[in-house]
Length: 426
Image 1 (cartoon, one colour):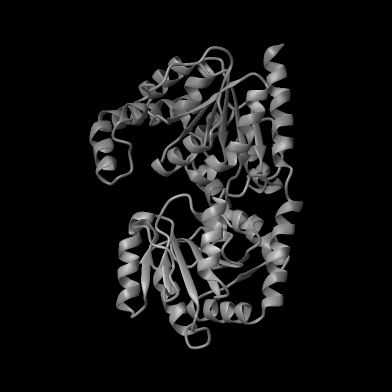
Image 2: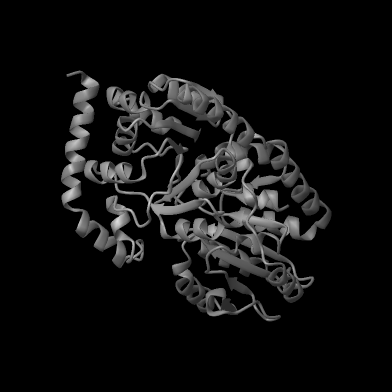
């Protein structure tokens, strides 16, 4: 037995032991509101739907961001005669996907990476083609799909320098996983080089699919109502914020209050269930607050609007020209700025944006985004932009134009996958 085989066998043994803890693990997640109570069986590979007849492609994205990126590919696979199965691992992503999938595509929760769950899942769905996105490398799922004869592609593949260093400590294991991929389509040259150095074959650079993802939808009547309510008030959105960043946003509002007495601050937390806590903090600071989850809209006297609901970023981004993207001053990694930029928003962000480093770098270089390091700098940046409408419009327009120039990864990805499909048919 080779070193690669030994490493993989050890992983499978550990995964089998984890499988024994699955009931307790899923119960704990359900109690935290992280699992669908009626669909827990899917997490153990038990399908909630029959397999449709014909060729089937299985697309998997971990959460909302990855799932949104996959959606533009779905019509292309349907046009090529495939039934489409999309999996994800979070409640939020499942709700988003199910509301946007066309006929010919279905959603299931991805099974935990336990051998018997993976085997059960693959045996039911019998995918002809498997497409994972970004850094989703689940060894048992990949192993069972490859053993069943499916072609496997990792698309929009990304690997940070830190992740590459970690994988270098288990070179035989990661090489064994990557060599089961028939195709690796990387976001950038650097990503491609890291995957190749770790053992991936057939590595090509296709660009970032996130630049092709359509901006979030909006109800036009809701948008018109929101625009009428905001009127000419200065407004900014703190989007996808994490614990600690809402406190910063509230402090920023207070500092700007004297200069911009009509200022409206919209807080859209990454985890909407934290809305009540955020609203309570803002009230303790003496601000007038309403919550979207309670059916409220910003009134003339509202100072802070807590948008603690799912699926409303399309509305919020269209209601402002400047957005602070969260998880960049606290927690770290950054949230995706592409949707906001596509919808014509100048982007402010902290220094911790390595999850979307390329997008932020491009926006910063185009002067469509601005880096801030703390509460004081965020306050100064907002004050400058809100006081200079011409500059703000220029940044916002440049943001949208920059995103448009970076599109095209979907076409390149489907071209590469077409070649894989053709090779599999020979």
